[in-house]
Figure: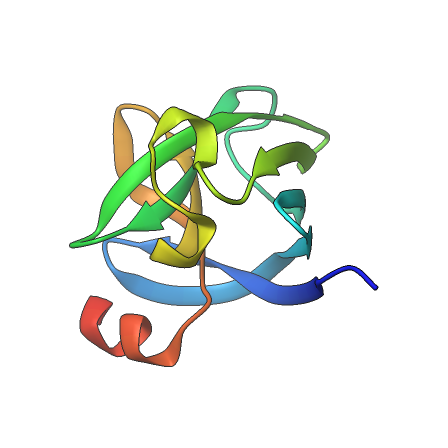
Amino acid sequence: MSNYQRLISYIYTYESGLKGKNVGFAKLETRNSQCRLTVNVKKVVPVGSPLGVYLLVGEMGEQRIGTLFSRNGAGEFRALLNADRVEGSGRPLQEFFGLSIHEAENAGHSYTTIWEDAAMNAAE
């Protein structure tokens, strides 16, 4: 039997560090060394502009894993990641503690989810 883990985490808006409303979810399904990541968000702005998708690591560092395009205020992002070495970072998936979606030049307004309570407390 293969090693299977699933995590579903809710995504919230953050404006200048203040937590806002729930706008979607991220789902990670890991089997052996392969991770399927699905992100669904609604009510995102700016509509039609591409937003970077980042995994959060270390002292609030980020590893970009792709681009989310929104249409009519909604967006979906899917990726297949190597859980042993995520997107060329050389880091295993276990070192990442959350996910953030924002414009490359404006991280002040983001859509973020944190997977670990300890990391969330440190971030706040």
